[in-house]
Image 1 (tube, rainbow, N blue to C red):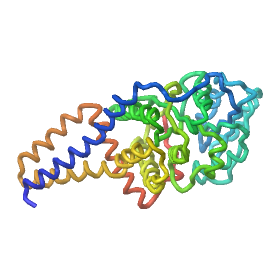
Image 2: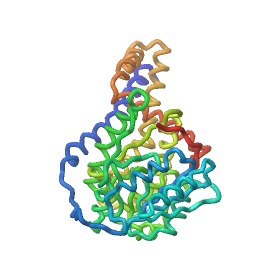
Image 3: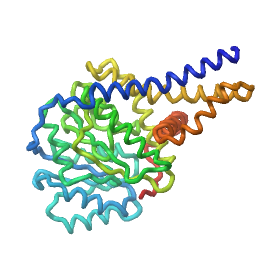
Image 4: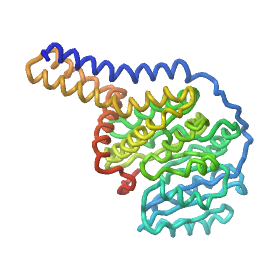
Length: 372
């Protein structure tokens, strides 16, 4: 190819890369974000709820997490907490037992796994002991934003068309160069209108709630991929229910103090696994859901590589002496000063690295990272 043609290809790839997500974002924001929910919700709906808390070496956080659950205004006689510990070595189970003795008014079940096999294995063990009609999964490092977070989330299940619920979330700090803050600002706006249209294919471990009957119908949580919450919620939507992120249940997520990049890459790996597996089930998608899954799969599996290809072509042309290519690359430097742009570039970089890393490890069980 001639340099001019290569430059055209590079610019075209960049246009497609940025154009599709921007078009999707503004379509969702304009057409769906401010629309009313097509859901009949009873705020007084109070089914029996089992909250599952998977743990591994969480001695420093588990008591504050249990305190957070205890401050929920949900009726105690309808609530149980199941802590499933995956062979912690730091005394986490003992901390749970001490907390349970201090709070006898709450039903708490502690399950000790003999070995660590990943979150989904732990959740499936906990499901065998759960008695609630609604199963709520929550990470230890997450804080629910108010005392009525659980009541708010569960009330959506009063509509029989709703099969799964997740929260919107706020990072506890902005992250490196405010990237985490920018990431959440963008995707909270995406998840909510996707949910109003039909369902969102991305759930959050800070609060993910499911009808127990549907989990049993689907055979529990998948153990072959890392995104057990997102993939389970998507499977729920694929059998005709709605899996939604709701605007009255917010969670605060701790961000790693160290190894922030490893944390983001691991999460990206799990999303890549989730969408690759979901595409094989797409023929079952109900109307309204298929387009959401297709766009999200494109954004996670294909789109990041267009930016990489465009950048490499421009670098090649700049080395060969192309002034337009050099000018386009130089334009990227000041754009990185803008939080939305650097947030987007960082997310694409994590997805590319994650896809490559999935070739040798799925990160089903990982080393614990210090968080703050």
